[in-house]
Length: 208
Image 1 (cartoon, rainbow, N blue to C red):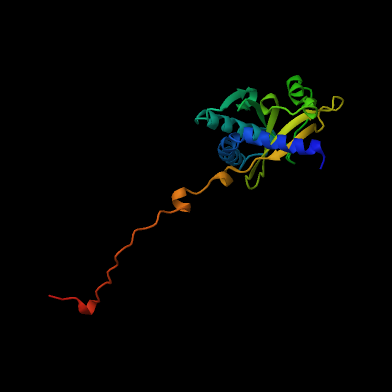
Image 2: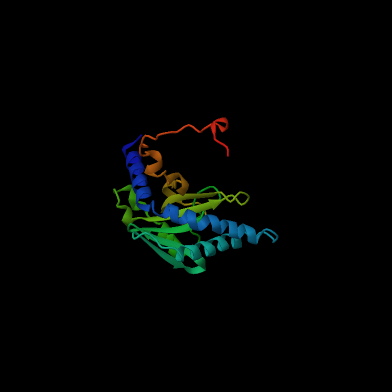
């Protein structure tokens, strides 16, 4: 393992730590929104673009109606786009290409600018100075949701729709994994000694 690889792994972990508040927020917003979209298409002609848009729409509505942690700011974009600032880090939320990776930025100038971060190879960056993408993907049959953090590096200017290079991909743990039992359950207080009295046999009871 090279020194650069070690530094990149450390940076990926620091990035995950900085963006960790987004995991529970997005799981709570996206999972029921996926079910809403699946219900809409239950007896309709499938349309993957509308399917993704409906998920974004319902997720945005849920995020706006719920309180957020103090370190998180939500930014609504055009076409129900989702963007956050989390612990100073910029993160946009996009659907993955189906394999957990980024689509190319295409001809969108704003997306191309967002992807262009080759400087991370040369320095030990502060996560707050870096642009991230939280990718979501789901199984259309089961509704199973996966969230992955991508850190874009550069894209192919000659073929901008191709997959871009990324410094790293790292999967968000599911929010349910972070749920721990109450200390009262894991470390129960000792019970006081109880005085147990044996029940009286029916034959020993007095009957009037």
